Structure formats: C-alpha cells, structure tokens
Image: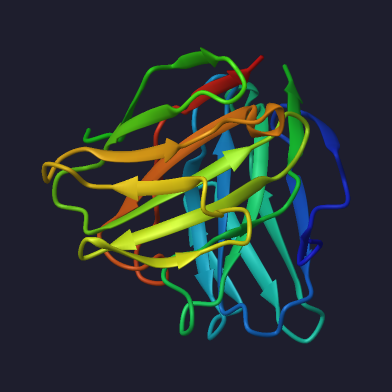
Length: 114
Length: 115
C-alpha cells in the first residue's frame, strides 16, 4: 500500500536552519492531511493539519503546504531546533467517506544538529 | 493535559494464545481507533469505533481481532489466537470527532511480542 509516500528516510539539518519534509500521495479521495511527530517509545503526536480547500496552514514554527495538482505536501520547520529531532509522519484521510481512518507514510527521521 | 493511556506497555505471549490490549481514551472523545506498526514498517490502520460499533476496519482486521468498549471508559483490542506476525506496536487513538475536524490523539503504545 503506497498511497502515501515519504521518499526521504532521513534528513539532517543544522540548528536554526529550515527543515523541509516532503510527502506524496496517490489517492484522489484524500482531502485532509496531517503531520505527526514521534519520539522513540511514544505514540505519534499531532503537529499540524491542512484541508484540501487550503494550500497553506501555519502554526508557529510549522507550516504545511499542499499542492493538490501535484498530490504533494510539505512540512517546513523554521527555525529548526535540536528538540525537533524525531520521526515525522505524513498522514492522509478521505474525510467524506472515512470514519477517521488515517493512511500513514513511512516516516522521515529528522536530526537537528546543535 | 488529557492523554490516551495504554496498558500494558509490553506484552509477551505464546503463539496461539489470546491477548487483550487495553486503552483508556480521552474522556470527552467519541471516536476510537486501533493502529499497529510492525517493526520497520508503516503505521497501519486497524479499526475505528463509534457509538459502540465498528465504523470501519481494514483488511488486516480479520475474524481473529475484536474490539469492545466494555464499561464506557476502556477500549480494548482482543486478538483471539496470536500469530508470530501479530508482533508489533499497537497504538490506540481517540478523537472528539472524525479526524477530518479534529486530530486523533495517540497513546504511547503496547509492544506485543508473540513467541
């Protein structure tokens, strides 16, 4: 099942710089997208979401961009901090037809170096 | 801050045995979910539960799996006859509404090891 793909298994960034995490999807029924962060031995923690009627959503240092025509979304973290080091999952929902089912990508390990 | 709690944190069981994984969702949430993550693989949806019945389930959620909300606070996942391939981290989640409107909050997970 490759409906949601995160093609970069890992990303390494210097503290203070921008981190850009990418996600592609194939299912046209997806209309709601979320980013989760996960530390070892913990469950995923919600970060930010975007509905398909928008192309951008910001929350503090986190911004998610959605390009529906390209079926691509990205998460920007500015400025990056060492505490941001974690696994980041992109997830998608076909809201109108689904009772909360999230389809996850494989995750990208972000390492922010001091 | 309210959180989803799961017990136990680690469960080891023999193949063929029944296991019950327990979850206490956030108290005012109405939608409940189970996901699993096999080591090195994606987080996969198993089932969603609303109004005391299954709303949606994946092809993974076959007859050996069942869910229950026995007492209005706990939400359980039962695996009737465990197989080696059931070894995974199991996450419970809950949300106020369908995920379209609010995010799902995840528990810390139960690591199930089938030997």
